[in-house]
Image 1 (cartoon, rainbow, N blue to C red):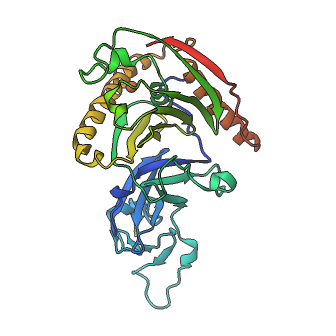
Image 2: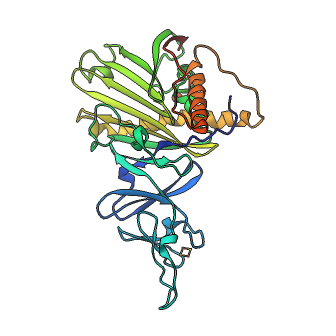
Length: 351
Ligand code: FES
Ligand SMILES: [Fe+2]
């Protein structure tokens, strides 16, 4: 069971940011898994990601100029292509030789799909291949459809505690107490849900949602949902009615081993969502902020390195997260394929 820090998993694709945050001819940057990353969109509109460090004297490349093809370092003007290779050193005079092919900053596999920029963090310089060669694809929506709503928030906790929060079925009544969400939250009711293993994690098996709920009514009749949890910290909820569908993604991306970026977004078929986006964004922000505040308070306690607990069945999914993570780490170390350690199970709790 983890304290302040979490092991960072490699050999996986992580959500970097929505594609709309990477404008043509501009550079964006982020720290992911402890590494500085600069992300650009080239003239052909393709995105790329490089280690955000100039190999000359170490200044972050994002301070430089980007002309849509090459990044010019802000310090001495060395230029780098989108593959990270150095293409020019302006200080060189005739007769002065430098083998540019040996000078480069690392490039990360980077894919933009469904409006998201995904970056692959290799195990030890391994290239993604097989099923790892592509980031996960969200259900229902085509590759060129981006989210209607997207927010991100910085959580002062490790990915483990962010993940526990994500899959915690019993905190809502105490943490998410806004008037618009669960007005009668404190009236706990018995819940029972079936779960089964799925790719790199598990899923809450598809089940019907209450037909009297106004929001669900907007999706048509026979509204049902399926929630998938998978490495490296993705929660994918697919809500479907006979008229419309909504897909929600929460992606936790480690900034370091004790700080996390939480991305929260929705893809929607109904056109009515566009005008509601500002309100939706506000509600999402309020909701996520409640989780953010809880982990800040929890951190105060975790600083004293207490022994903490996971109980059945309310915390069973948190246990599964640790099992799946441990298996990923062991499989990577032993150079063998990941074997999902989970079995189908029905969980019961009050919430
Ligand atoms: S530090 Fe980048 S060119 Fe010198
Ligand atoms: Fe929450």
